[in-house]
Length: 456
Ligand SMILES: O=c1[nH]c(=O)c2nc[nH]c2[nH]1
Image 1: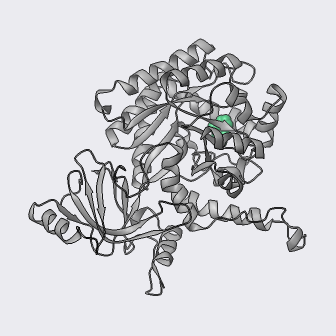
Image 2: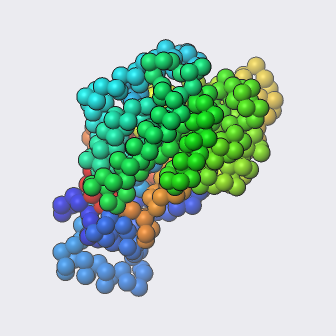
Image 3: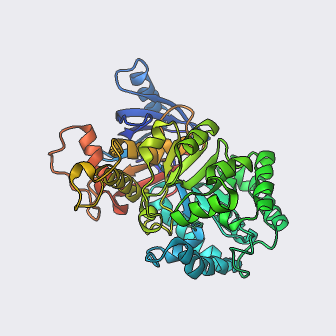
């Protein structure tokens, strides 16, 4: 390719996207015109009236870039649930219940981010690693520390990632350790405002590529005063909201016991459920909760790998989708010992099939599961990882369409160090994409762009 930056250029490329759930749109030698602002202006296919003229003009004016033969363009991945400070414990401490894991491992690790140098070191590595695996948009939980949260936002700006970054609010002395919590509701709310102001006024963030997020950790860690204050703050600032929702039997049961209602209903009464709210996990949503989320246009970050370790249940994904709930995928670093959305896609398909079939071989097939029609396939998983994640965040990403940011990755199926092996047996476009999604690994990712800028 001539140069790597694609702002103000026209890209000639083949690839795939999934603008609608369940459908794959194969792109063959399309021309994608990208503005100086990194937003896609036009997508023109061979055979369309303007195609030959647009190709000739791009050539004559020297703005044509061509994806090398054999490489395939995909939309950048959207990771809806990342605990940035937990990256150092990825793949550790996965054999204890959630409430033990939080107190024994996670809170002590997160407390270390009082040290800005430690935060800088971890966050720099994490953001670079996620970009290199194709995560062009990430929704981050940071820690309670204002300074370290600002550092994470700064690093996303420097490295070129599209990101939403939240200072974690957790202040309940009954459930949070003294060494790691906000001192009071006022401190939680003031710290959240500080981070919002920092991100919004950052001179390198005029285009709003990095955004602040109101982040009550989960109801069990927050006092009602903090939940109330953050709900009002979210209304005043118009920011996204993220939290954990009905993740495990313990977490779900805790909220029922304390508030006499489900997480979703309680978040709603505090003003924390709206378009732009992303609820991680949500495994124990009731049918009424799903209707509520759909009505509020709130979204779920489905984290299938993490749920296998900590939830004791599988999120009823298809039921939620059929009720109109917005859903995207999350790695849940480090509740999930994965950092790639490719793995989350694969797991989403796998666990949906287990939910449908049931898992106890001692039972006859028809009694093994009470769920029918629970499965999704790779087409839907690909949509959730891209356009679905964009829709969950109300951001124009995840599709190759006019008005969307050019956030993309190039897959090189022939990369020697990679794990895709093609044997001239792929019968059609969809089978090729299926092979890529199931077998690709980091060495197959030859390039990554955010807003047309080359970032990995
Ligand atoms: O998977 C999870 N990771 C966390 O850090 C967390 N905090 C509350 N609930 C949580 N669940």
